[in-house]
Image 1: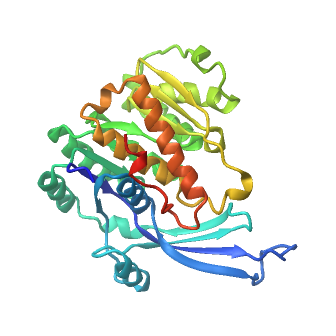
Image 2 (image 1 turned 120 degrees about the horizontal axis):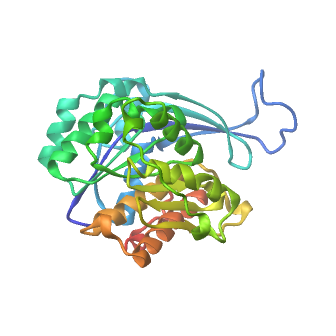
Length: 331
């Protein structure tokens, strides 16, 4: 494990996954459904932290503790940590059908305590997810600015991605150097900037050069203008395009498309945590490099490839974080 601390601030949850039975041929709504149910440790922040730890980083996770049955169950699995409940219903092939997330507990996270932890730990890299409040995001961003700590923001979902722009101080701090949205979160984040009287004043006109995406799919071309737009506020935008790979945009510099790593459809066990594991391996590698803002192209390609491999290993696993993620993915 690396000696430097990687601090992850975000959600931890008890995942309850219900998978419908193979014999089911009719609707699963409005009735009980044959299948099986399993519980496992989850939550975006926890998944990211475990993936980074399995990759080889020295990780510490900051979250909140709930005094409920789910919390007590989680405390048995993770010392001093208990979380909210994320209840997901999956189809037979592991795809997400519907989900219910109870995340109100994150309103109880204490900004003063988080600030004290950051100042005490002096991590070399911080990651936070969209489950925390906008005020907490501002606290983290401004604290990390004062300590010159680079930060990655994992948006988590479309509604949660918008919290990042609720406090102007969060973006003005300029400590958040990386973000990892999917194409829907990316679009929503750009719409939030454009509709903000404060943030939109700082915008400048940028020409989008799509010639660098010669062999990229249509989805990458569609995401490019938004990624370039967002890079004016977060200088490194890594857009997760699911089964079509990912797109990297660096402010005023590189644009690069990364094709997906191959996986057979019948190898996919479930999709829970695949994107989180991408982020976990990504930040473990970013932290390892002393000057993460000056990655050369070859190193960047290897980091993205290894992050994609972490996702593949998780897609093949029944758990939110694949146990086969290991330090071979750390450059």
